[in-house]
Length: 137
Image 1 (cartoon, rainbow, N blue to C red):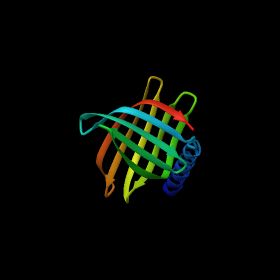
Image 2 (image 1 turned 120 degrees about the vertical axis):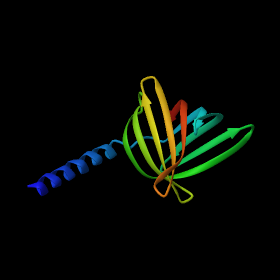
Image 3 (image 1 turned 90 degrees about the vertical axis):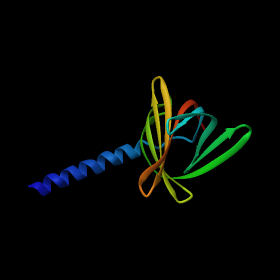
Image 4 (image 1 turned 180 degrees about the vertical axis):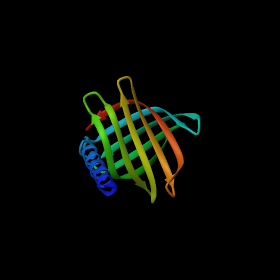
């Protein structure tokens, strides 16, 4: 009996995650932000995050100097309504052999992103972005 219950729960979870993943096909986009927080420090930094197909490029501009980081999207789950920019998307990413997670959260009055760098599966760095705008390509 326990085996049947376990199997039923596993099947339900698989279908749940499949339906979430199925809703996550979103257009390419560009996010802009002028405020980034890391380790409790606010950093005035002009940034963009651009999703194109299976790649996200994070570009930072400070004092006229530009720097970019490229990420390959390995997985994507969540739901996003492009007409209202409401929902939550969780991107699994790889950058230069480092695993990362990008969480994009949209509420009626707030749009934010969190980029987490992982080291051996454990959080190493976290960046919080207050998003000024999002445009869909």
